[in-house]
Each structure stands twice: as C-alpha cells, then as structure tokens.
Length: 564
Figure 1 (cartoon, helix red, strand yellow):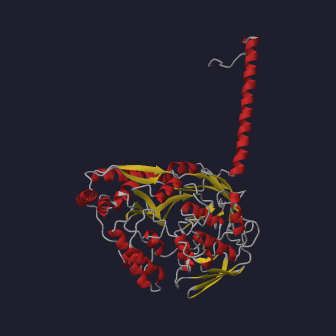
Figure 2 (cartoon, rainbow, N blue to C red; figure 1 turned 90 degrees about the horizontal axis):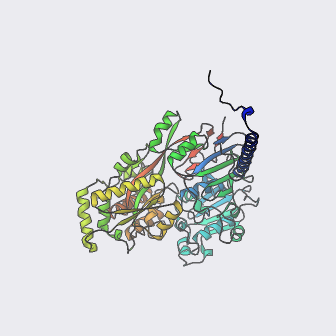
Figure 3 (tube, rainbow, N blue to C red; figure 1 turned 90 degrees about the vertical axis):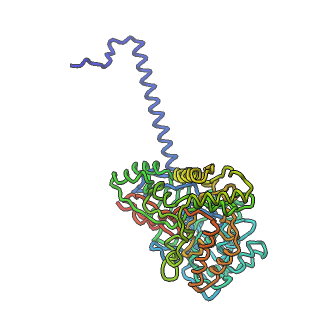
C-alpha cells in the first residue's frame, strides 16, 4: 500500500490551521472573482458580437469571419470586395441577382428600356430601416452624389453611360443635368448617352445603390462610418461594428422579401485571412465556413470535411506605376520584369491550391464572347519566360534611363500570409533572374488601398473582380479616366477601343474591341498577370443555401438557412 499523502490536520499547529483557512478563503475569492469577470465578459461579448458558436440553432444565428476590415461602407465611394459583400447584405438596388445568378427586380418591381431611356417602377413595400419608403428621389440623390467632383468617388466612371455623367463628374455641368429623373416617388427614369444593351446588368452594382438625402446630410460627412450613421433597405441591418475586430448583422424587420434574410443574425466575429487561424476556428466550431490554404488540405481531408471549390472570377496581377517620376514608366524595364517571371510557377509551386489558374490576360476565362468564351475567340498573346531576353531589356532600360544599376524597387502588397508569400516569390525571382533588389512594402488592407491611390509604389500586387456581367467591367480598368487605374497608365489607343465597347450595339464589334484592348495591355506591359483566383473551402453541414458568386457579393448569406 502506498503511504497516505493527505494532510493530517491533527499534526498542524494553530497557526498552520489559520494559514490554511486563510488560503482557502483567498482561493475561493479568486475563483468567485474570475467567475464574475468571465460572466461579465460573456455579457459584453453577447452584446457586441452575439453567440460565438458557429451555429446557434435556437437563436437562428451563424458566426463567421471577414478577410479584412471593410474600408468603406458608403456605397457611393466604396471600391473593395469586402465592403461590397457587406453592402450587398444590408442594401438593395434597383435590380439584384437571385440565388441562381439571374437578374431580377430589387427595389424595382419592373423595368423597361426604350432606346436610350430606361424606366424603373419601384415597389411600394420597399422601405428604409426607419420605416420610411424608398423613393425614386433616393436614387437621383445617390447617383448625383457619386458623380459629384467634391466627393471624388473612384467609381464615378461606372455611371458614365448615363447622359452627361462624365461632364458632371469633370465639373463641366451641374449635378442637375445628369440624365436621371424622379417622375414621381415610384417612377425613376434614366436617360443614357447612347442605347446600350448591358446597362440593366450594371445597376445591380453597389455604386448604383440608393441613399436618402436628409439622413445622409445629417451625418455631417460620416455616412457609413458606423452602424447608426447609415440607413438600410436590404435584408439585414448592421447593429454592431467594432472596427478591426467584429461586425454584426441582424434581420431588417422592414425588408419586403420573405425569401431572403432567413437567418436572424450573421455575426462576423473575426477579421482575419490567416488560413491556420481559420482552420482552428472551424475545427473548434466557432465559424460556419473557412477558406483553406494549401497546407490545410491534408488536415481538412483527415477531419473528413466536405471540401468545396469555387472559381470566383477575379484576376490578380502586378500593376506598374506609370507616373512620370517612376522608373517603371520605362517600357523596356517593364518588359524585363515580365519576361523574368512565370505565373505558372507561382500557381503550381508557390500557391499550390486547386482552382487557381496561371494568369495570361486581364480578361478571365469565364467571360463570354460572341458565341464562345472571349478568350477562345481572342486568345491571350503567347508568353514564355525568357531570362536572357529579360536581361537584354533591362540593359536597354538602364541605357535609356542613364543608370549603371537599377536602384531598389518597391513592391506594395497586403499584410496577409498569402500576400507576403507571393511577394517574397517575386522578390526572389527578380533578384535571381535580373539582379534587382525589391523591397516589399506590406500594408494592412485600408493602408494599401490608400498608398495605391497616392501612387506610393513602383509595383503593386493588385486584383480586379467583375462589377457586372460584361467584359467591359475589366476592359475599362486602365482607361485614362478611371481612378481605379492606380498606376495612371494612359493610352489614347486603349481609350478609343473602350469607347467603342461602351457605345456599340454590335456584339462582334464590341468583342473585337476587347481583343484589341487585350493586345494593347500586353504590348505596353501595363500589368504582369499573376493568376485567376479559386477558393477551396469548407462549410458547417448545418448551414444551407450559402452562395458564392462571380457577380455580386462573393459570399452571400441572404438566401441561407440553418438545418439541424
């Protein structure tokens, strides 16, 4: 028998007994204190972000994550996919895409185009989150405001098909001359510069969302900065936003469509794109879905999760800075960088995820042409890595620039592990193949967008997703008037081809213009195509009806429901 190691109180002195009693009381006090603190923390967490379980069946709540903090919830100036995804849950435009990807009425119950004129008839039961009706005047105000030179919206260009929009945006005409009219509260009429067949597909994009003038003005320039400084007309309302940490959506009681907003609360309790963090959160049943990195696939298969993939339609590229003060304005230098790398190597040896395609063009493979895909009808120019030729172009550039050696070049990128990994690949490739030192400038999402806008880079790792279902959504990115053209590339020839694509009603003529735009971007080395992104992801089996889209919100919970 082992000796008894318990304490025999009969052997203790009085002082010793007092010490034990005091210690026990102290420990009990700590325990009570810790319980109280945890209880209070639970209340705080519940108030700010709700349940932290992936699925709360009783409360009809799901918990998930955002890849980044939404930089801008003002739909008139928002430019990024994260903000767009949230806006598509809390706002609704004239038209929208249904769960099958078909265009249907949103605020507009019907619409009709007659040449250059489109009329939208608004439904009576479309209301703001304060119970007031959404009217045609709200669209007139929002569209005019998006084009206001004082606002400086980088997406103002998307409204240019509307009569006088470009002149209004350039300050040449007053806002009132824009071709929009509230015929009455329920009738909204749009006059276009010229008849185009794709305008109805454009108005589902966030820049075309409504805003109520009285509420907007009352926020004193803070519209969309916090939940209470925004009105909502979509299936959800934003009720909490802890910046950089969490965001909470609750069902909008004034929303008209009972087929959307089936889940009561969508709790974005985390803001991260780190695949290891996401995998652990999903494993611990704290989030309903997770995008996986290449190193996570084995673990996901080991867990027996159902792995899904999605080609999400975005193209990624290195964009050059074409401003006069930047060395990358030199064509031969851009050619040297282009020929020194290989997008296939990036995808197959660095990213190593199913669904990714090596970059070949600004135009992704899914875009439609006349009868087939655009890229089948107008193949991307042939490219092969050629290090010897790359070094020749580099020497030509040095001669033209009057330099013996290229100084350090700055590559701007995001601060996610994936972004840094890809940037480090290019840093190593350009050093090895060209002898060029590249400094990686890694920034948080919002700061990277700001530095892109200010032109604080030589090269930047960027991407572009479709705003609407037409090749023009990619083709006009590098026009001289598009403020999303962060490198400020300018070409009269490219601008002319985009004008053809914007105005022509001949499908074949438009597609030829897109083919020419593709050629010009390749020959001028406006960008280095990296890849077309795909996602590999897992979802909680109790979450049903979640949609991943090419057009619209990349992740859409508005049709989702919970099933035991």
